[in-house]
Image (tube, rainbow over the protein chains, first blue to last red):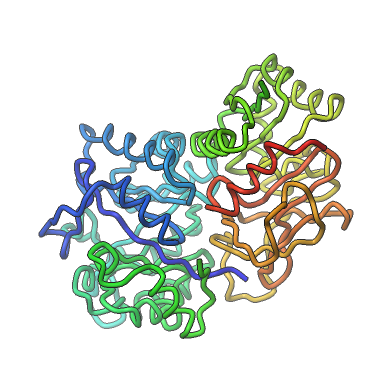
Amino acid sequence: MLKSRIIPCLDVADGRVVKGVNFVDLVDAGDPVDAARAYDAAGADELCFLDIHATHENRGTMFDLVTRTAETVFMPFTVGGGVRTHEDVRALLLAGADKVSFNSAAVANPDVLTEAALRFGSQCIVCAIDAKTVEPGRWEIFTHGGRRPTGVDAVEFAITAAAKGAGEILLTSMDRDGTKAGFNIPLTRAIADAVDIPVIASGGVGTLDHLVEGVTEGGASAVLAASIFHFGTYTIAEAKAHMAAAGIPMRLT
Amino acid sequence: MSLTAVLDYDSGNLHSAQKAFERMSREVGGGDVIVTSDPDVVARADRIVLPGDGAFPACKRALDAVPGLADAMREAVEVKGRPFLGICVGMQMLATRGHEYELTDGFGWIEGEITRIEPADDALKVPHMGWNDLVIDAPHPVLDGIATGDHAYFVHGWAMRVAKPEELLAHVDYAGNITAIVGRDNIVGTQFHPEKSQATGLRLIANFLTWAP
């Protein structure tokens, strides 16, 4: 049986791990490769690196980080941030990433997902969706770190992204990110029900019950969290044990 | 000194495969690991690894586009009997043919077809993505120390339907069986990524590097 996944997310800026609270206050939480090694040992199911300051000038540090991670840990990881073309995907895959995540570029032009999927396969193309509640039961995509509204409906866009060739959706609730109030369950459920591809729930985890809710109520295939793991509030093993106790199939290591 | 050739035909993620094979080769005295598209290197290699990420037709075309590479691989495997490991689409290409996007002939080393995953439970997502627990169907030297219940990392939307049950070495359950490992004679293939499957995957790699079929 396929297991639900726990994915610690490492927000990276200038080669260092940070954790933004609502994407503004940054706290340096260490070296990304060391963190990857620690999460590998702890039994995390996947890792996610997001380059939150992705610019043309600092791409080199990200490739270096991806290369060093792939040399060090033998577990799957996704890289996102500043990915615009299928050439960016190729460079990151060659450096050792397993999956590459599009965000703003896919909102601007969903065909970029098709170009990448045809070349590398849907299985390695993730579409990140950052959504904010605009009225009850309606969510809109915001890009550029949640600062720029797009007018694009998040559920409709998720359907488009899947049809265009994305193999997975990384769904972040901008209302919840950094709040520790739990996932936005109606949003997660709406998107998980709308698409046939796996959905990773992200944004708002503060307790282990939140992780459970993401799967049981939100319908997510994987749950992503950062600070509760980065700051040692809970271990991966505790999280897995808690989810397993709630009846969710987990890979216990 | 033993030589393992990891075939490079511009398909996906070779870096982590290379590093995983290098690391396990150091541990088991498996010799050199070279990522190569040179048919001459393949001709003198003691072991062949064929990774593959992406769509079946794209991978097959890319492999055939490297001058002499597919022929050197066939010679090494079919004539010289060198141990061969195919990974993910590199495993799928062992089959008779693939149905992804268009009909594409595989190597025909393992009789079977590559078809879309269609779980009996509509709630299950495709691609089949994540950790699933192996059910071992037949003992094999590359599975030494790996047991039913051990997890491996899968990421694929298409899977192999094996024609001969004896060539199915392991499967996983996803509202129906999905082929996980196939093999016969000097040939094995894994649908999952051993280079991404932590201890279980590294164990399989070490076993392959010391396998003498």
